Length: 154
Image (cartoon, rainbow, N blue to C red; front, top):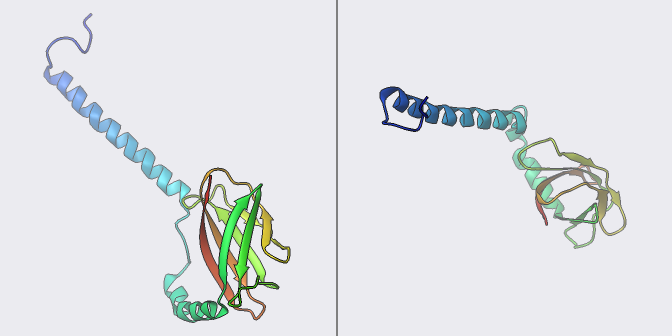
C-alpha cells in the first residue's frame, strides 16, 4: 500500500487537497460565528428610538452635575473616586456599577459599594487584562449619572 503523499498528484488527490482546505476554512468560520453569537450580549437598549428621545436632556443634566469619575483596582478592591465640580468627593449618591469584560457577560460582577469619606470601595475579583466599569449612579437631587470607565489590570 502506498502513502497518500507519494506519487504524482492525480485528480482525486488534488480534489482531496482542495476540498480539505475549504473544509478547514468553513469549520473555523462556523466556530468563530458560534462564539461571537453566544458570548456577546449585543443589546444596549430595548428601543433605540425611545432612548434617543431623552438622551440630550439626560446628557445636559449629567454634565450640569460636573462629576468626574476615576477607578483603580488594588488588593482585591475596586476604588471609585467620584468628584464634584468643586473637586470634593461626591457623597449621598446611590452608586451602582457592574464590572466586567467588554466582550462577554460571563465575568460580570455587580459591585456593592461603601463610601469611606473619600471614595467608593467594593470588593472585586479581577484578573489581568482589560475590564469595563459601567457606572449607574443617582445624585441626591435625582439626576442620573451614567459612565463607562476602562480599566487595565496588570
